[in-house]
Image (cartoon, rainbow, N blue to C red):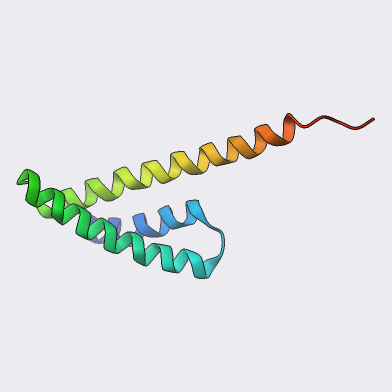
Length: 88
């Protein structure tokens, strides 16, 4: 059950970190789902691991990376705004 919940929420959450447009989010979510499944299956084959757990670990790691990227992009935008000179 946890694998089903993770495969339903991780791609959508990762896509949400990259865009706010619902159409782009839906396309990215499907793309993330395919990449998570194929990447996890490939990793499980190469390292001889359980496929379900590998898919979830791969998708979780990618989700953490997108969260970090989103936070970094937010800081860069905020830093650019605070560093701009104020016209007198």
